[in-house]
Length: 432
Figure 1 (tube, rainbow, N blue to C red):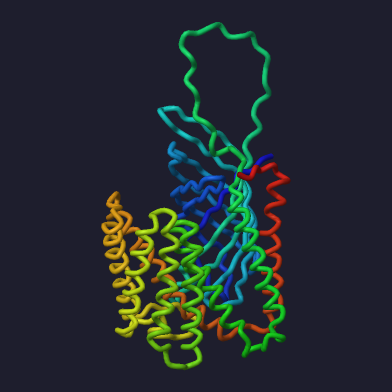
Figure 2 (cartoon, helix red, strand yellow; figure 1 turned 90 degrees about the vertical axis):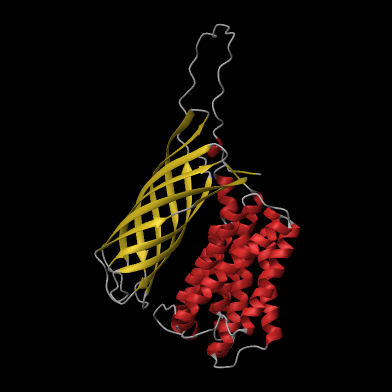
C-alpha cells in the first residue's frame, strides 16, 4: 500500500471533567482542524473535527474522531475522516494533561473540477498527541493543543478486463481530473526537515539524561526548557496561520529571545538594558522578515522587519515587555495590561503589513493579508501570555526524578522522526 503524507494540527475546546487529580468518565472535544498535505506542493485545507473519548482508567481510554476538510489545489478538494483507537493520558500534572493516541479508520477524499467529481474510500490512520490545558477552576473546560501525523492508503483499483476495441468516435472523451491526492510522493526538503527535527530531539533528550552532569538545578536545562517550549508554542501558532516555514523561523527566534528574558525575570533580576532589548527586537524582526521573504519578496520582508523592530523597541521604552506582570503559577492567567498590550500588538502588525504592502507595490489583497498577519500575531501572543505562568512554573520546578524518563521519551520521538525516510522507502513513497 502507498501512503500520501498528511499532517493535521488542531486547536480545540474540551468539554468534560479534566482535572489532573481526577479521571473523567468521558470527554467531548470540538476543534478547528486545518490539514496540511505535504507531497511536493503544500495543500492547505480548512476543516473541523469532533471527538469523544471514554476513559477506562487514569491512563487509558478509547477515542473516536470525525473530521471534515475542504481546500483548493486549484481544484476543489474535500474529504471526511472517521477513526477510532486508544488514547493514553498522563494525569499527574496540575492543570495540564498530556496525551498520545493512535487512531485507525477510514477516509473519503474527492476532487471536483468543471462539474466532474472523482474520489473514493481509503484506509486512514493518525498518530499524534497533545495536551489539555485547564480553563477556570471548575475543571470542566480545557484548551486542547495537539498535532497528528495522518496517512491514507488508497483503495486497490479493480482488475483490468479484456474488451473489444472501441469504435472510432469523432468526439474524444472528456479527460477526468488527475488524482492528485493519491499520488504517493513527498517533498525531499520536508523529509530532510523532519530528520533534522528528530536529530534535535535526540540531542535534547541526551541533555536531560545528563541532567546531573550539566549542573543539576543550577545548570542550563531550565533556560533550554523555556527555549524549547516557547519555540514550540509560537512556532505551531505562527505556522498554522502563516505557513510552515514562517512558523519555523519565527518560532525559533521568538522562543529563544523570550526564554532569555523570562529566565532573567525568574531570578528576580532587573530587565535588560535598552540596547539588549533592541537586539532581541531585531532578532524577532529579522525572523518575521525571513518568514515572509519566500512569499512576498525581499522589499516587503525588509520593510516589515524594520517596522516591527522599531515598534518593539518603542514598546520597550514604554514599559511593555514580555515579562510584564511576570508570575510563575500552576494556573493560566491574562492580566488587564497584558490583554491591552496584545490588542495594541495586533493593531500595530496590521498597520505595518498595510504600509509594507504599499511600499513594496503589493496592493493585491493587502487588507486581507494585513488582517491575517495581525490576527494571527494577536491570537498567538494571547495564547502564549496565557500559558506563560504554567511554562514558567514547570521550568523552575523541573521534577528531577522524571527527567531521565523524559529524556528517553524525547530520544524515542527523535528516532521515530529520523526513521521516517526509511518508512517512506518501505511504502514506495516517491521523493520529489
